[in-house]
Image 1 (cartoon, rainbow, N blue to C red):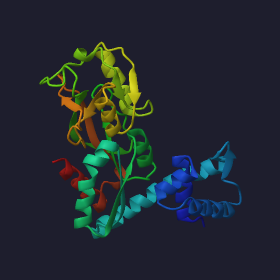
Image 2 (image 1 turned 180 degrees about the vertical axis):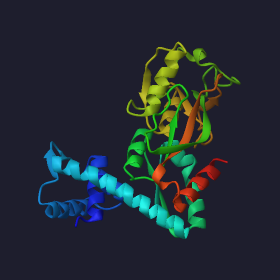
Image 3 (image 1 turned 60 degrees about the vertical axis):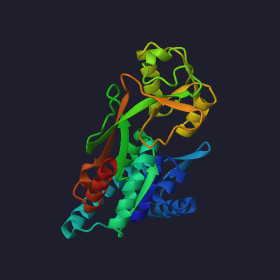
Image 4 (image 1 turned 120 degrees about the horizontal axis):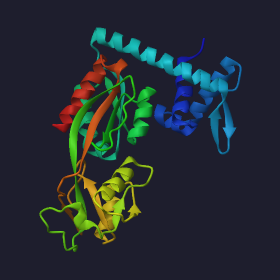
Length: 297
């Protein structure tokens, strides 16, 4: 009989694309992942992985087994959910995926509340971009995904996934303190058509939103500097190297040399929680979602 934990390991490799990614998702060492995979290969009697450049890929047999493992793990989750619902237990593990500012501004108070109220529940955070979070959610590597989109760029939610709105997050423009518009009560984006811009790397969803937003407001200038961390973006603004559009969620006071100015009309992004339909009745999920909603309020 195939070992469930080894199937879970193979599934994590399939989902993340690497042994290291699987180890991070499962909170184990890379050597532990390699050992589990070697034992699984002995169980099935054929190779499941092969080298590809500096990395690895699943063989045809590995792909087939990983696909079946995903279905099996979802069925196991459904059984565990029904059993937990019968006894009303808030226990086990629960993983929340969130993009950076939600990971900073929403999830910590949620996890604190869960730890205080439900000591038998081990809740943890992993920071992921929305597209990665949805992929991990579908494959049961995370239980709740906190994601974002914009009214003009809605995020596609796959079948089998439920959602609930958490908040609308307003974004302001960050300007150097010496900028002639830094003391304005509000600005319109076309007022800033001649600015250089600081934004996000091209592989992040916010990058496309920023470029599209600037273009819709008649601003054709390229984003001059990119950084994932808002603290780095603001350091570039403070140095007089450009303007940035920064969300309010998870944001601290303006650092020295920076002024936040509201924009009219105010750009807004939508923040919401996603979860698998199969976990809806799990007591741990229900209290975690409530704690997340309380963190917003």
